[in-house]
Image: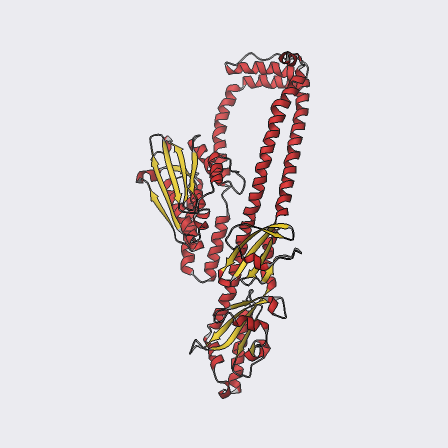
Length: 583
């Protein structure tokens, strides 16, 4: 009975009913699944972006403080400085002491000009004409009652970093170190103090705050605040921020507010760099994402329904006749359609269709030629997606080496970079041999070893003949980079071995890349193997590789991941044999 009623419905209502059953309902189910996935991606994206910016800030702060510490050590290693401090001024003439004063002025001025240093003061025990000169040289007795001096004494004989709360001028922190006698290192003959403006550190943290809505703090091991990127009005017990410096996210409750906390220990300075993320930030982004998807799907459904109504009402019957006629093209070219003389868009379609039939053979030939052009254009577009950050980071490393005067390593790195891009460019050719790809990998790994200062090795296992295999360039280098960045460099020691093996059978080539890194979470491995990992601008690598391989080898190229937490990951690339790619 129900079936009979459905058949008796007008064609317009049938289409609307089918649209409700087979379009709207599946779309709503799909929308719910997509929204759930989007919420998970929003959370993951916030975590990933925050951790990436956090790591960059950690590197900037460490580099900044290492420079300040380096300048202090260089200052203390000045032989003339020790000669002046350790001499007996009671036996020296006024002219000699004036000469000493001028030298100390010049030495101090040269270090005050450094961007990391705000002021320098030397405290000594002997008496001299220049004591009190421009506040650059003072006696130790003049500071013995100060709180910062008493704070620093607990850290001797090593350097001490005194927070701003110990100074009347609360806008500075100080690197303080005892001056040792060049004759007897056990004897302290003075004290050197390098002042750093807190605003300089705040500037580094402010760059992080420009990218995220998180709060960033630097806290010492005693739970004392060094500086922060902004004051959000919530009283935070800073001593609790140093309890979980394990590189993992932790939940933190403060006055009924919920936060996520991430912290690391800057060992050289006994500081903790701490990030605090309000959970409301994540919730707000997730709600806005849900609203965006809801509005989008609602508009799609409404527009689809409107289009269906118009389509059924105005065009269904006449287009149906054209469709039936066009279906005959599967067997042979049918006679031309007769003109209905209505002089509307449907007649224009009939005329265009008739013209198409007369040009079919010519268009097929043109389509074949265009197909080859499209393949070339697609390959070029995919290569243009190569991430430029490798070049930026390498140039930055060359700049650091040049500043340190390490000319030998500058030359080697530049040579490796030149070899890398020479092979990558390959005179405009999209394809290279496996041996040339290995040369690209060797140049890339050498630069990364220099950059991170770690022991990274790669082993190759393959027959010599397979090195002549033709592949799209930069096929294996991104997989090697993933093994390095997401595997080995995530280990505590940041060293390890990558193994690249190649074998073949009559029907396929099999390429395996194995690392001994930290491994990949099982849920991510599943997404990678199912092809559900998003191919966004930040995650295009795997999609890019398979796309280029499928253009060259045809369909059938696969990339399969296996991983064990704490032991490493294996990526297996399977390629169908292609006659022109056989060695």
